[in-house]
Length: 231
Image (cartoon, rainbow, N blue to C red; front, side):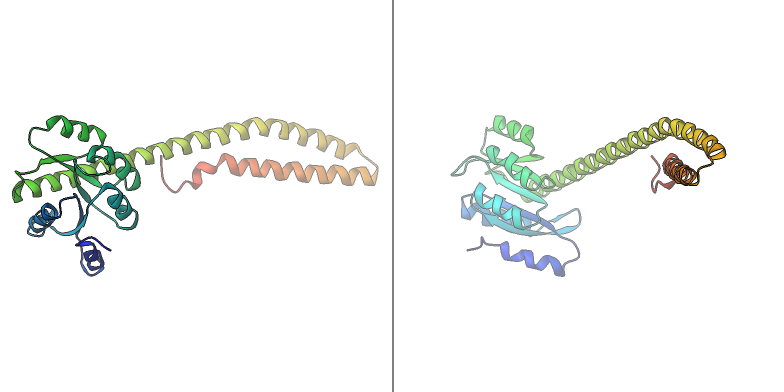
């Protein structure tokens, strides 16, 4: 049995852009009232596509199979409060923005929720359309910015790893190139002096092998020239 609103996800393929929102609350009447408010607003110019579930477990399953931009989660639910579920939901879908819904005078819970990863919070019993739209918009924007920063951080780390790798390859080529040069010189001397055809053939083969190694080392030295992106 699918929660009310979950079938709307099929509509996203026919829509240019939507903000996919999941409401998590065990009070069906409250869920429906929040859904009505959300369907009357837009988030950064995008209409809202709303789904509902009644528990943290159901929310977890939903996120495993549905792409979601924002989760509105109640703190007081059977099977664990909303604060306890925040980290688990973010582990399932790290790019999702979460907004905690708390009772009046429960600022401490809201602060804890923000520390766990919530982007904003709303006080139940005092949720108006403007406040709801602002909270979801801010949460989605904060999450987008955080994701952008994290993406940039990973790119910088990858670039640093590549730089270290290229430098290590260059150093290894330098150290290997010296003995290869010495081997070449000695083999050339032996080649000039050796009269036995079989031994001469062995020296010739050895020289070819060393030259092949020197060629590979030279290519590796110039590996920086093959980078597709500058560091």
